[in-house]
Length: 216
Image (cartoon, rainbow, N blue to C red; front, side):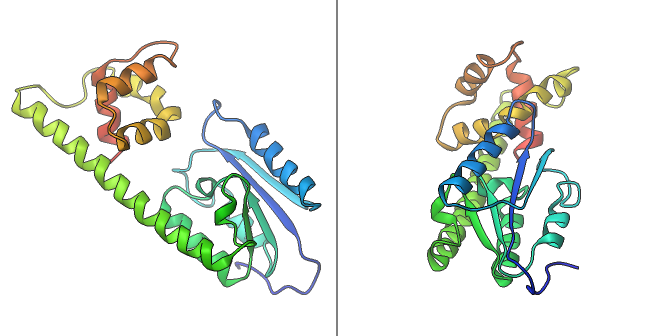
């Protein structure tokens, strides 16, 4: 089912995915087309969709992409993160691509593009994977420590009425929240930064509920 032996002309595919309305399909498309123009590449097909990375590979059309690619074809994305829901899934996909000599191009991360230096990109991908996993573990541990401290102070934990619905508006800002926490920004400061970008401010309770459910 996946991949085909290459008996014809090599093809170039672009894969564009955004998670929310706040992100732009057009922005990614522009960068991919700009790269193709600069390198005199003709893109045979663009796969575009707006869907969360939490959805299955089938829903994200990854299965369709794998079925279309042949040995030696080229796949262009803006970033590594467009391919999967987590680093492990992404690295597994990259390994499949490498096995079938699919050339990977990441317009925003040229150092990871396998059409440049396969050995270097493999090393960097391994390093990215290690730090991505470590970052998730650190965030998870900080969240657990925060919850433990709250319990020790006698605070009532759990989902207050309405907190689940309010926390949903943080979904588009998940990556930024993760980054801020990973560099040591306090939750109260994160709340101020994110509230400045929202039409309607949320409470610390909603933020903590979001952290406990989304950033495990």
